[in-house]
Amino acid sequence: MRRPSSVTREVRVLRRFRFTLPRPLRSPRWRRAAAAGLVLAFISYLVLWVYVPSRFVTVGPGPAPDVATLVVPLDESLREAAGRGSEKGRFLLTTIQASRASPLELYRALTDPLVDIRPRWSVIPRGMSDEVYSRWGRAAMAESQAVAAWQAWLLLGNETGVVSDGGEVLFVSPDSPARGRLRTGDVVLSWSLGGTVRSFVLSDDFERGLAAAFHREGKAAAELTLRLMREDEPVTVSFPVTAPDLAAWPFLGLVLTAVNPRTDPPVPVAFLPGDIGGPSGGLMLSLQIVDDFTPGDLTGGRVVAGSGTIGPGGVVGAVGGVGKKIIGAVRGGAEVFLVPHEDYVEALQAAAAQGPDGLDVIPVGSLREAYQALVSLTGPEPADYNGPDLPPTAAGPLLRVAGPR
Image 1: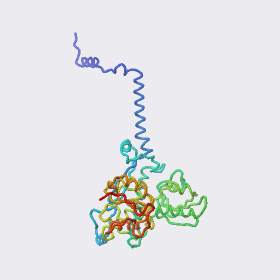
Image 2: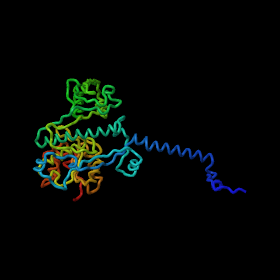
Image 3: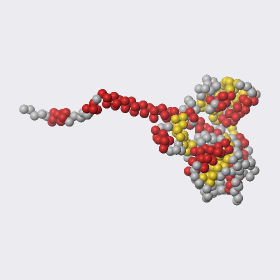
Image 4: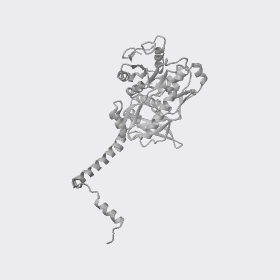
């Protein structure tokens, strides 16, 4: 008899030990369950990796960088004359961090009480891409830097102003009255409404000026005319504006950001590039510039954190996420926190929640108030009020949240 070849023997062995599913797992019921499991896994993938990240964001405390790493004096002779101050004292610019709600970020939000899950549209306008939102944030920071330098230089007794090359259209929402009339990439040079005609310099200036002109008109609707450059050609567009348009977010359903905002004459400082966006760092940038060009150390050797926009007249405006910024300040070792009047109560509550060590929370309405408050706290006899010539706040002269040091 012919002996089987080695290949034949291997086939017989494989057949003898062939793997088969146990009988219960070969039933139609099990196959249906397996199919259902695969469908459920696929749906879970779509929900966790596609739907949720596109509809939700996580928001938590962000970093609090040393402001001296963000703004650098260009005139070293002036800075040397002022003195470099204490090595311990520094200003911190507090931030919040918003991220797409990926599975990892969702896990952070579920395990960290300081991280929230929010609808995407509450942070990023509907229809706006992440890329455009990032550009908007960087552009807002650039405007804030120019205004911060302007107001700090004025406080130091020097003359300067802010100029730009117009306002670039970054976004037009589907509900904007400018839909179909403006395009992304257009550069607005000037605007007119009623008897008011003004050049576009900064987005905040445009919004405040337009709102004031509209209310002076006293009508339900008014015609807004924009003169702009489109693909190197001058263009004029007009469209009606109503009161609800002024209250929309973003303003008019538009995102207009200043092109190349700068001080004129130039303030001798340079702003270093970074990952921080938005206008809420204006106050701290201004204080750093003032400190760089004045004798002594404005911080008094303390770590001073804060948040607040800065506008014409040195007015400090409200910001968002103050509670989370307080946490970032505490993590950065801050002892003092400067906050706009509108956000004072929230900041005070957040500071109290940090425990007995706490930090001093000081409400300010202007850059001058912030300067005076720091001088009062760092002088030979620190005063419990917000500046020597300022009225008390609604909550009292100065509510302090601090334990013994």
